Amino acid sequence: MKVIKILAALVGGLPNTITLLIASFIFSSLIGIGVAFLSLQDDKVGKSVSRVYIGLVRGTPPLLMLLLTYYGLPKLLSFIGIDSNNWAKIIFGIFGLSVGWGGYMAEAFRSAYLSVDEGQIKAAYSVGMTGETALREIILPQAFLIAIPNVENLLIGLLKATSLVYVIGLADMYQNASNLSNVNQGVYQLKIFIILALIYWILASLIEWGFRTYQSHFAHVEA
Amino acid sequence: MPLLTVNQLDKTVDNNHILKNIDFQISKGEVIVVIGPSGSGKTTFISNLNFLNNADKGEMNFRDKKIDLSSPKKDDVLWVRRHIAMVFQNYNLFKNKTALENITEGLIHGQGKSRDEANQIALEELKNVGLSEKKDAYPSQLSGGQKQRIGIARATALKPDIILFDEPTSALDPELVGTVVQDMDHLAQQGQTMIVVTHLMSFAKKVATKVLFFADGAILESGTPDQIFNHPKEKRTKEFLSAIAEDR
Image (cartoon, rainbow over all chains, first blue to last red; front, side):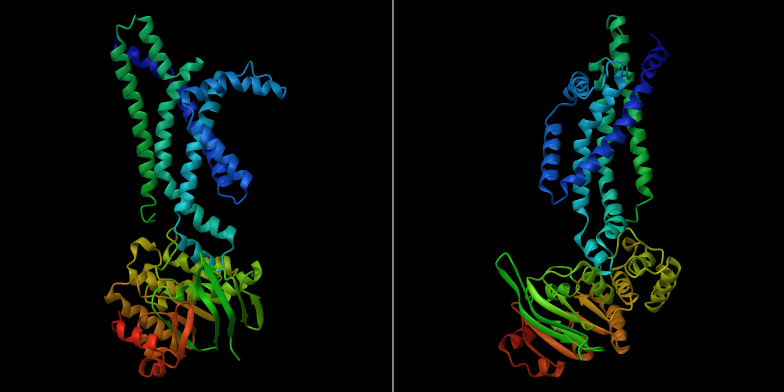
């Protein structure tokens, strides 16, 4: 089988892979910010909720998270009168990955926030800033930069995790590769999977390049 | 009439009695130098004057306003910080801001000045410390001495009644100490009221109007530089002065 034919079949799954990656990245970041915020409050309830969430998510394999979402979410939704039977599978994929990655994102943001040098906060207060202004002008911008390397790792991890959506029957690149291998009785499977690996590697390299470029703009800010 | 009076400032952390009923006052134009062994409470003391940590007990009287040091009102804290500036041992310049922005942040967000006005003041301050050409540099691109001079400019730009210096030269390489001390000398000559925690005895001898010797969280002895350096009364003061190297 020609490389170009394999490539065409695999790339057919690329839109789903990219959609899953981008949407899950956005939602898991939002969940992460929210949970990190809760975990940093003095409020005991918020702290406990965030700790339980992070604990559950970190202790659940991503594959299982997708299965739980696919089979469990419709049941939960039906309790509140929402019928999700006709929802596209990709919604469950995005949901499962977002919830699964949100816990890691929360940890990345929380630890970055706590890594901001206390002297920076003291200086902000000493020049007369309020707590909110210090947060906006000094703490969050620095925490954001500290979080970037971890977020990059998580995004690459998420890219690879998108290949797990085959368990809910979603046609991403991996699912296409697997199907192509099967219909050819496994004759070309090594060739197919090498090509698939190369595509993931290119995507991961693009992410790395993007982060490197972004970070180079902030090279003058020592973390 | 003193500008700032502190009565019975007391603080304990984890059973360590860090500040023991400190009484203190400073008048306009005075330069008070605080010396003493490490761990004697000097930094905690001046941090308290800027509400950067909380006291357990004590009262501040600043510009005729009484403020409880153990549970100050939020507005009072902001008001005091607007009038009492601080220079830190490790500079604590905002890492994500340029030299110019480091100076304008307090003017804009603390004092409510417009960006234009703040920029003008900041440029003037940078000129005063001879660092105009570094206005767009970030802290990571500056030497320790330059950082501290910008730290001082950040404080003076606020036109504060008092500037607190927490060991401003301790983190500097010896050859960079001179320029920072020069800036501080200059400020003192202009009549700036200052409280300086330092090990620089030459600065204390030359500039201080009064020297406080801290030991174990209390002011053990105080007096003019001549009294403290040439005729110390307390044994601990004598030991400290003979133990420290001249101008470390």
